[in-house]
Image (cartoon, rainbow, N blue to C red; front, side, top):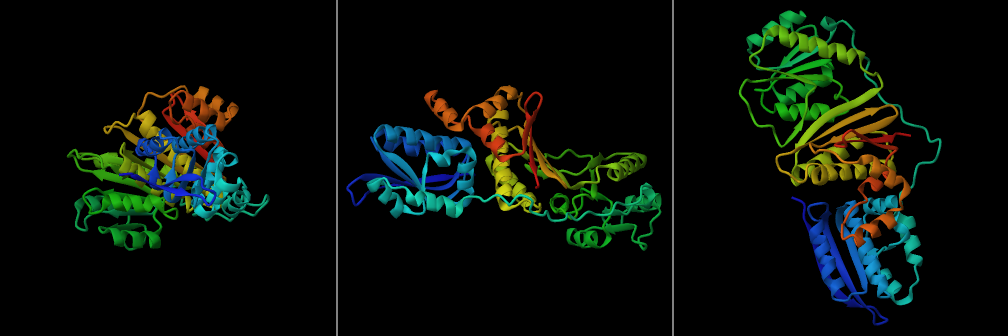
Length: 429
């Protein structure tokens, strides 16, 4: 569960100015935003005109949280005061720059420089601090790392390499072996029943298709590990589920196809050979592809954000671009939770990830009814974020900056009708 803690203390500058220092720790997202707003509202209603936000232990802030900084800024400046941020993590400074608020909000390396600013008004430390941590785009024309690409297997399905993850003694496995003509000795047909053994054999055999019996221990973890790892993600996985209904896990990395017992063997053969043909004919430029879904809950959203960060680390994106796509994806998932699914616990969010030689694409889908995305995309292109933030504050509504933030992070932001699926595209170059 996401938590934000705000610890306030009052200090006096050498020039006898009263300053409120608010130490902010944890995460500011849709769940914790009301707590953050409450922590700023109390001193502002008490007449505070100078505020320092100490952020060294803040790991994430969403667009609505950034809008709260603008609200505090405008209130304090009406009182001839100001706000300042100190000890700001690099990732958060990048987000502040993306949305364009670095031209408004003073950023200092530490409390001492911020207090000196409130006495003198000199902002030399601001430029120095921003230059120290600001994201630096890669030089134009920088060479791109070559992307390893697995040689595709023969187009005739019987020649493909198949791995079974089944109990060792299983008549089902014997029938499958007969179908594909493997005897377990020539490397074209492998049986295994344990996760660690499967992962070891996977690296050695490099199969084209895996059939995983859901009764095998750690079947969910095995599928997740294979699909999360770029080197093995393009292996096609078919899951065989028992006839008994079981609730979907709160967080699930999905297989490529599935069959449910009871089924005819010919049904499995047809699904498997169809999957093999799909992989043979699919876009040869795709190097990592996976899909996962999660319950509409804060704890699962944090797991999703961690998984996206793990996927992005396996790309050729430099840290500047990687930070932007992580920020955009967090915003998209948060919007799906809060606006799309309206924070309902019985809803789900699905995320599709695809990496090719040119770009990374992430599709975030919720179960909501959608919205007028054309209006907000146009607004994001035509409206200044600072102006938008102030307009929302006047309306008494936080937020309104999410789509603007995502647009500034990405090569392209697109929505599928009716607006409950957004596509985030980031070029690798």
